[in-house]
Image (cartoon, rainbow over the protein chains, first blue to last red):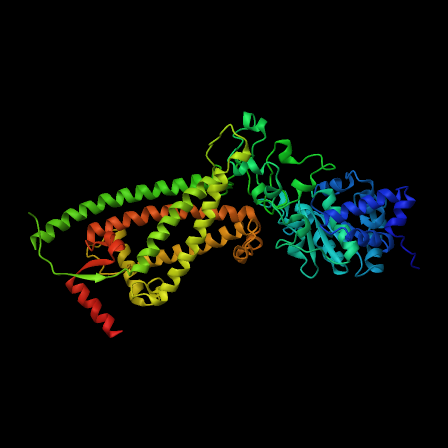
Length: 360
Length: 236
C-alpha cells in the first residue's frame, strides 16, 4: 500500500504558511541558485507538484552543528522543507522513534524507496576501529555503505562528512574519513562549512527537487553555485586589502576602522564559500563583518592549517610551533654556516695550490 | 711577481640564449621572492587616506603575477633550448643516464664538498652534481608554477591559469597548496645562496672564469682538458 505523498506546497498550506510566503521562499531560492527570474516558475512548479522526497539523514562522528544550522534557519519555509517537504524518514536526532523501531524505519525506507531516497550524511566515518562510532550494533562504515547502496545521491553535510573536520586533524586518532573517500559508486555532494549556511543547505535540496539531478560541482565536490568564489572575493573589506590597509592587532585603531584582517590570519583568500554574500542569521552578519578573521571552515584540513590567527600555518613535527618562514630561516642559517666552513677550507686549499702551481 | 705559464684555450660554453635565460630567470626569482614574501607578510605601510585611494598591495600582487608569466615562459624556452642548444645546454647533462656521469657525481662530492681529494674534476660545462641539482631545481620550477597558477586560476578570467586549476583538488584545497608554494620560496632563496657561493668557489679554485662566463659565454680551459673534450666530441 503506497500512500500518495503530498507535495511541498500542500504541506506548506496545511501548516498555515501563506501562498505569499511560499512564493517568497521560491523566489529567494531561485536567486540563491543563480537562476534567471524565469527559474522562479520552475521552482514553484517543482515544489507544488513533485511528491515528497524520502530522505535518510545519518549522524556519525559529528557535533550536530549542521542540523542546528539548518533548523535554526529563520525562514519558516525552510523548516517545512526539512520536516515536511523532504520526508525525513530516519534521523537519529529528530525522529520520535528509538531503538529497533528506528532501525526498522530506516530499513523500510531503504526497501520501499530503493534508488529514490536521498542519503544525507552528517559526520565522518572512523576507519581505525569500528567501535569508535556504532549505531544499532553496526559500524558507521557499514551503516553508510548499506544506506548508500540504494541512494539516488548522497549529500555530505559540513566539513566532517566532506573532509573530516576536527576529528581528522593530525594525528587523526580515529582514522576519520569523509564520505567521498569511502563511497565511490554514488555522486557525493560536499556541502562544506562548519556548519554550512542554512540557506546553502536549503538551496542544494531545492536544486535536487527542481532539477532532479545533482548541482554542478567544483573539483572538491562542492556545489559551484555557492562555493565557486573565495570569501576574499566577496568581502566588503576587500578594498582595504588592495590598498594595503591591514589590522595589526585586534585592539588597534585599524581594527576599529574596519581594515582588512589578512594579517590577523584571515583565511578568506583561500576559502571558497558564500559567507560574504548570503551571510548568517538571516543575512545579519558573518565573521569578518564582526571583526574576526575567516578560519577557512569550508576548506579541507582547516584545523591543520592553523593557527587561526596567523596567516602562515604552523609546521608539524617540530616540537615548537614553527612557521614556514622560521624553518626557512633556520635552513638558511645552517646553509650560511656550512658555506662559511667550506670557504675557510677552500682558502687553505687555495693557498697550497698557489704555492704548488708556482713551484711547477 | 708570482706567475705561471699555462696554455689556455677559450671555449664558448654558454650561448647567448642560455645567458639571456639565466639573467631573466635570476631577475624573475628575485622579484618573485620579494613580492611573494610581501604578499605573505605585508609590511605595515599605512596611510590615513581611504582605501579607495590606495592600491599598493594590489600592485605588488600584479607584479608577482606578471613576473610569474615571464618566469614560466622563460623556463619553457630553456626546456626547448635543452633540445636545440649546444652540448653544454643539452638535457643530457641534467639527467645522469651514463655511468661516467655517476662517477663524476661522486668525484665532485669528494673533491669539492668534502675536500678529501685534491685533484679538480675536469668539466667544461656543469659538473654532474650541479646538473642533478639543477634538475631538482627545474622540478621546483614546475611545482612552483603549477601551485602558483593553480592558486591564481580562481581570480583570473583568463584561460591559461585554468590549465593549472587541477592542482587545488589534487592537493586537497587552497590552504595546503598555498603552504607548499610558500615553502618552495625558501628552496629558491637557499638555492640562490648556495649557487652564488659555489660560482665564487669554482672560479677561485679552478680559475676557468666561470663567473664572467655567464656574461660573455667563454670559459678559459687548460689546453689538455680542452683537447680531450674535443676528441670526445668528435668521437660521439
